[in-house]
Length: 329
Image (cartoon, rainbow, N blue to C red; front, side):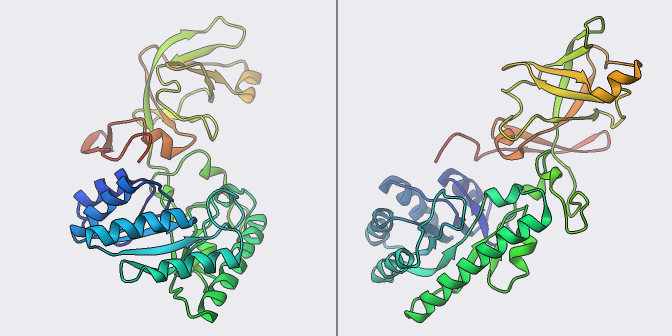
């Protein structure tokens, strides 16, 4: 990790964990509120890290400035612009100018660097042409904001945004100066549904994250035969859809294609898909079989675990602690 440059974190605890592993360019790409959180970021700055913060309210700008002045540090600052998701970010150019001028008034403790223009919902638009149209609107707004900032003598050397689902579009437009893909490292069942420009499923990255589960019950005599695994909602996130049943642990395909259904906290119910039911040749995995699931959403699934096991073939090569997991900052 010591060779990493410019890493995005969503939580203060994530930034702290990355700092302890040697990452010295930290961008907190999410708004935070509270003096105590800015004080924790000041500790990282005192430790030699470059710290960039994101703002969309005058209150948080004032909080960060107060901490920077008190602690004798400086923070880089970006104004977040709402580019369509209607989550965080200011809506109008005038609001951007107001915050940018306020940030500059706190120099040298706050340094106005530019804007964040991230559209999270666009990451999961399946159709490429539809996604391209949405991102064109994002780019247009980012450019208009940049031009107005420059016109008013305000710094806008950084325009950041884009994620795993759209980063190629932001990177190619000549407006964005950096992009923020992250989920590509693991991939998940949801991102795998996205289509590329050629109309095929995206293939710029491969699946690397799996949840290991064990078959704990089977019922071959049921009207719809089923197997039950020990991975329920305590083991996989269902917010972006169910996980996919991938393979047996040794990589061998299952003889019958199975679909995952929510069985509660500790149970996942596996049933043959409709095509398999129509063949009348069903074979469930045996009790004790170990299966690999592809999570529907990699981020919150990882957040449930203490460790990631890195394996190649039948050999474990690494065990990584998930230091930044947890519910909040």
